Length: 316
Image (cartoon, rainbow, N blue to C red; front, side, top):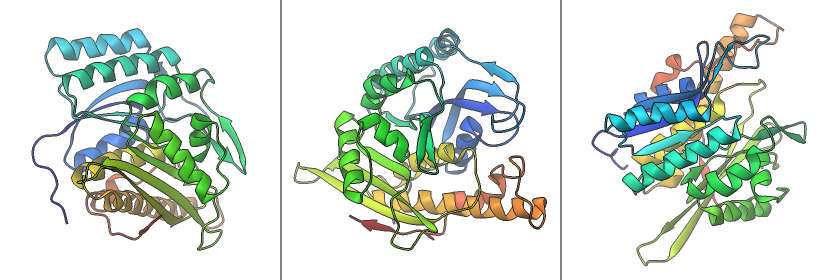
């Protein structure tokens, strides 16, 4: 097994923040720190809790305020980053300013890796819908994805970004190739509605990585994983997934399959612990509330740090 890279590795994470629970920066920072990264966070929003609750209060950072925070970092000469991680954003001008910052950071460090979770929407019962303003789609497609190195869309987001529906595994492969052509070297479709070989209680996630081989030719490694469905609606899982994929692709730079398996296995272990605890709190026959379904992150520290490989991938 490869040894983790040595030395301080710093991540700039520009995401939402909540006081209660784990979404955005709260979901990303802890696993990254557990896995050895220094994490600087800029909170795109600061809310009391995520918006699945009945009530929430808080503030939203605009593009000018983002630039002001970034300028403060620049004035102190502390903008040497190895990774940038972004997630949920609702404002097109804010998102465009994020791209400007990433391009500047990449000029400063050409080896910087940008990990983007292009949060646009999802499917429920076969019907997809956006939960951000539609004006964000062209910003993601034309500005964000082309500067990203790793992207983690779900099936619906992948279809939006490429304009192609995914109905078969071959469709998924072609969509991942289309996303590669936009810029990213690593593409992971975090969840799909494709039928799993193990039955309807499982869902499929697919990943693809392109890299130049020793012979100088471009090589593509595609992987499919099947994982058990969990009968609950969790919030923050996409943020956690993107953070762990960042970490494990860093620690296993030459083994995408292992990095992907560790990411998905850790996710599954966190969700299993969360749903078990939530059902205990809710009581027999009662569906757990959003508050009871907050991710059990701290309790899952050992699984995040050294996940048992309970999910194995298949090379396509």
